[in-house]
Image (cartoon, rainbow, N blue to C red):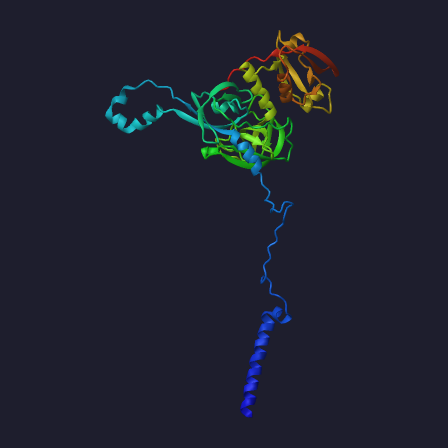
Length: 388
């Protein structure tokens, strides 16, 4: 009897100990709850047609635009230099032969372009094809073909090329002034020659000027990565429509990588330049023949125009020019061109350039604190000397 009692006590002690351990470490087992993670349920949200929705993607926009974006390869032959007599010396060639041989090789450049017409017209940057002896275009479908330059416009940094191939994919232009600050955009090009690449960003600002990049500036600013090789590529909206031609970046070093500040020429500007180049071989812009200066608060006060810095101060009127014949004088403040407000000298330059040579324009100026309208017959902007 005593032996049975000892066995019972030991068994009860073990059970109580086990119960204590379980109650301390896993109380959920004693409450009858299902341990967390024991049953895994996958919830699949279904759409109306029974298919699972895809994650947010801009693949459709990229798929639409990418076939129209091309890679541009240019080459420029190095001019032969007069051969030095020492070049025939074996010892001299042993030490300097490789460098001399390298100087005779053609230099190459890389950029991007956008097919804008099924007939083979391509928009790119003027600096991409500048001084090129030969130009080769590589399409997204791996076709390669030589291209010819239809015309260039260095003042807007745009150029038009032409290729002859069948079944060319042409990009669709976005509506004029369709870009808004905050809109999502894609930049497509060939950065660093690695191949066609798509980067994502937003429209950071519109109407950027006074950057010193081009004579005529009205850039779309974006934080979509634009790197060397992207020049001339496409900036598109989320529908794959062309918003601009990627042109420049802000970088701390020449030829450096993007720091999130890139600039594109608006598609509307590019289209206007392209049409003129195709029709006339060059771009014809309006011109009135004046020198201007930015209005400042100090200048406004000196002209007794307090509280305003709008307009462009006329500092010079060239003799015999449209402005001279139209009665414009030094000291006038130009505030409107055909009813469009002039905010600064850059705006004035763009508004005058947009006028058709030979047409008549109404220029509103402030003279002696009074606004007067001058009728001016617009001239043709003379060809500007090339900047070195």
